Image 1 (tube, rainbow, N blue to C red):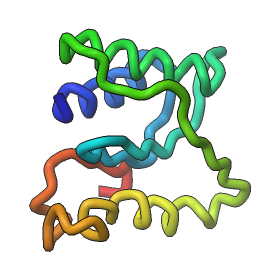
Image 2 (cartoon, helix red, strand yellow; image 1 turned 180 degrees about the vertical axis):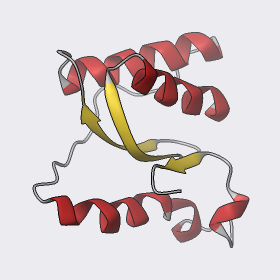
Image 3 (cartoon, rainbow, N blue to C red; image 1 turned 30 degrees about the vertical axis):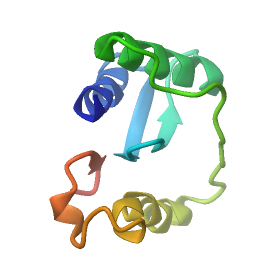
Length: 108
């Protein structure tokens, strides 16, 4: 299911709905740092991601709603991305980020 959610994030970029800076799919939530593209709002884009990934999994994966945080300065991008993708390390899922398969970042 996590692999399918990753593919949906990449698909959203290909469709022109978003530009993904980074993401990590955790066992019970995800973090997605993105820039909106096209005409869809953040709520519509997240709803599209949740719906598409749940349909691919064959079950409802996500709780209602989401938390957002806007970055106001370009220099915040890389430090925030590092924080986002380090979630599996901080929670003890892996001891090396390279061992965790469900994340990506444009800087790689």
